[in-house]
Image 1: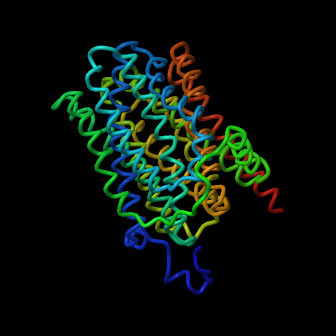
Image 2 (image 1 turned 180 degrees about the vertical axis):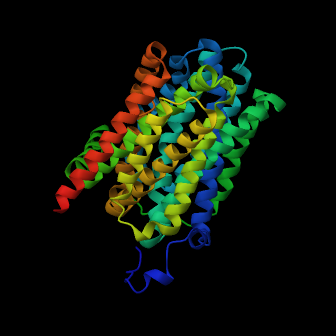
Length: 412
């Protein structure tokens, strides 16, 4: 797909954000991602606050994440099979329309039935399982190979920027306008994003759209088998799962950490997310500008070491300034994990099987919001948030050192 780049060409053709954003098709995909993510974060904020107000516990806060992750476990892999067959542009358009309409459907039940609110949210997150692999597998179809690390860095930056904007703005917007108006804004963002998706020129290779149950199972197994046989792909997905589990757990603990340890109130947990998100944004900007100078496989080592050290620091300090600095570097380190690993997947997974592989990846990554978060949420209610931070920091630091030593051993 991309042209061959020689060493002499690299200095004058570095992957820059300004370069990929001049690509109209990629720009539209990026805007689609931005609006959809902000809408998702508005919904997630409301679900987190509703759950915490009802339960006053870390386990309660994990319920919205459990709803999100469970939908991925159920539908992620099979969604990837269909995405490989369907028109990816059409999948994204229909997904955005459905999510927008379903968010509007939540509004009448906000003060009437919390179980129905979570049921509709589960359906929304299930629809997202089709959107995610369609979007992810479209990136290498719209940019050249040399621009992939910049494109992935920008998408990762947008993920955290949307979390900053969504979670950070949701609190004052909810206080000012009310829950129902915020949900209307979220629905409007999903519906508006369909306009940018319409403008993408994305070539679709015709394949038989219908599929029997037997064929579905065969193609699902094909995606798993591809991952099993390709060690680099398998290791990348495992690392992404681990990093996401850690970040999801920190997000879950942030509500209780804000209220019980920092004393700034549960509703202000968004400031902690802001600090982590700012770190990821700056880390992503660094990679977008200088990432081509480093070996992609070595960057996650730096990320794990930074993240592990930050978590250990969070387990022992209470000074608000130091806490925010530690969380900033947790996000910065996470950028060095996510962006290079996602770029490796884009480069190494063949186009014909991308939907299935990214569907499986999406299942594993989003399942990080289920069992690890629920289990550690329960443990945190018993032992305290600091104990979990200490445990996570130790595991992340050891994993980073071990991975670095194994990598050097393979090169020797």
